Image 1: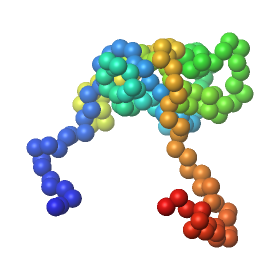
Image 2: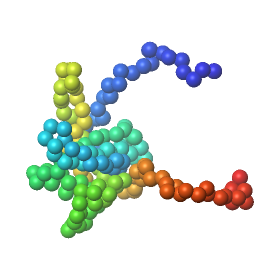
Image 3: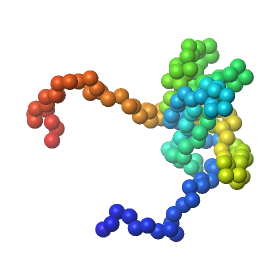
Length: 168
């Protein structure tokens, strides 16, 4: 049996259709800092994963991407996201890193709309746009982010494990 039999009739173009407009229960699945290429504005790139454990909700496991740019004019979005993720009134975040750690894996509802744009090749396209954040009606905790930490880094001596310590 071969690994793969190529079939052009089953190949996709890579063009994803946006999810339907509406509200979706999601988890914050990835949060990272970035800087805009045009103006050098610092920001936070957020990946939301549509939950697949909600009865009747379509598009489970699809990723929705959003960016929040750090500026006085945009802090309302950070506030709305923090509140939707369960931040109590008066909670302060000393750094953007504290904010990022707080929202990671949190459940919430996002409101999706569509916006038109022109792709690099000049063709008109439509993509999802996150318009608002609300507290989750279901709760829960999303998967923990993947860690790049090697627990054995810096260990120079071999780890001695006897056969008696193995479960098999």
